[in-house]
Length: 237
Ligand SMILES: Nc1ncnc2c1ncn2[C@@H]1O[C@H](COP(=O)(O)OP(=O)(O)OP(=O)(O)O)[C@@H](O)[C@H]1O
Image (cartoon, rainbow, N blue to C red; front, side, top):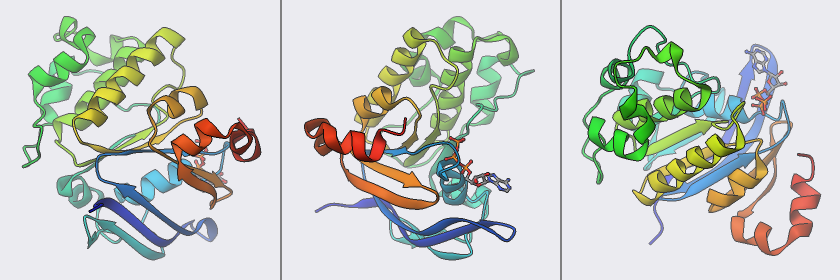
């Protein structure tokens, strides 16, 4: 039987009077990766903020393994097992790599527990820089650290907002490899990406947002097999 890690039902989000997400409904199946695509301003970051509690939806339900978290505070949602890696990374620049990871640590009963050792196995480049201040890392290393921090919270659901932004192609490939490995550990992931190739290389399912509404949703394999779909709905990239 399919279990949904997340279920969104008719979610409406606003900034003040400005209506940004319209009656959004989608499912994130446990252990899968959903690529969330769409042009600038489509509402992707707003959706990530809404799920993680940084923006409270005006109406609708956000079910985390069946429990409605739509009105909960960000700390409660994080403790319940949803971790956001925000656009722009937001690590603590004056703390070392290891300190950044340790302050994010939260033990939760999940299948594959994350700890320092496992984060360093995932991104060996971080282990080389354990004592280095995070603000002096390269963009790619900061992204790996931001993902590592989220994993230290031992989430069930990981929200990644444009992890490839501003990174060189070789580093993008390294981040993609990390995402694939994390997915294989059984995490449920929503990945916001402008990099279509990266998104499609790891996605199980695809949702395309257009001005706060779902323009397309379906299995990634359908997009792979039917290039017309990519042109019709995704050709905007
Ligand atoms: N803090 C805010 N206050 C008011 N309006 C906002 C705010 N943040 C975003 N918006 C508006 O909400 C809409 C959706 O923005 P959002 O950042 O979610 O889009 P996005 O798909 O993530 O785009 P991008 O790829 O550029 O990050 C846009 O019209 C944007 O101008």
